[in-house]
Length: 460
Image (cartoon, rainbow, N blue to C red; front, side, top):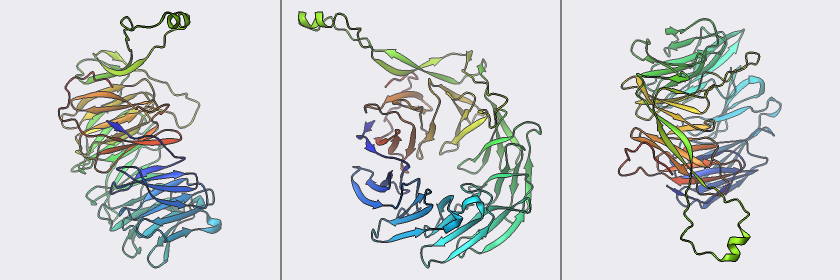
């Protein structure tokens, strides 16, 4: 892998959807860089510190959330002199997002009083009263023609279906939830999945006309759903729960066909590859070095500096994984499937059980079995699949990247001084990674090796 030098950042950083640009927030400035050379191609000055940025899908526009004001500013890469400012006045702005056509901005006011659709074409606006959430509760179809917006009034949750052409409400129907958590269209736009808050285990499948096609409830007592995700192919719906289990439903029958448990004791007949991160001291032979006597006497009292390299060791079962017991007297326990992500071909899904924060589980959906376990030294911050192939990259806040493919796993040292990777993102074509430290970022070219090594214990 090849790494660029580090550049300053003070907030969000992200690739454009077409992969050509990187947008970086540096205090009140929005810096647009070319992905290949990281040269500055545009520089925009906002009215306050940038809290949030989001590209339009066509990569021509970008919005900046100035939530301290609160205000939204939008910029055009094609027409740098064009500007847009959205201010809701006393209502405030809690969140903003682009519509699929890249010509409308949706903002949610403070206290979820209303959701407003702002047109960049004719400055018209449409209001939807009482949105359920600020950043959640809105989902668009894959073709960009319709939006589903969750609202709540009279102590009941509703789904509003809007046309993204003229933003007229096409239909409204109530849903059987106590406290709706979020909503997602299926990848084929045929169904809508919604799920209840953690206090009630309930996953509901609705048709766009408001019919409830299926109600799924794995158990009644205890905290319920923590994460939900469609597979890219649309055939599987994965549900992660607080009971530390991943359940997968079929889109044909809406029945559970796979249940994966996250146990701290892994025993036979488990045949998964288990990779454990270890520190290996570097042995430096200085016997053949010709050093002066003065140097040797001057350094005889100093302890030699020990250098390490990080690598994976392959571990056999049985193995006991590090596990934390969440306190029973505190809300929102760190337990259950908090991280879940599908590979681009829907063959693998990775999970992190939050009371085992240093463990990443990789499940094989073709054989319905555990494919690999990655045992890290530090809690896993992020795990992201390559958008073009079966390759997973994760970070733990250390100066290393960790990669997994079906042929093995390996560690890569980031060759930048005091650079700890706290977050990462893939470019849309899978050729480049954006790595974030606390106050800087860099990019890394990540080409696939011609011959993927079958040696499971790869080092940096």
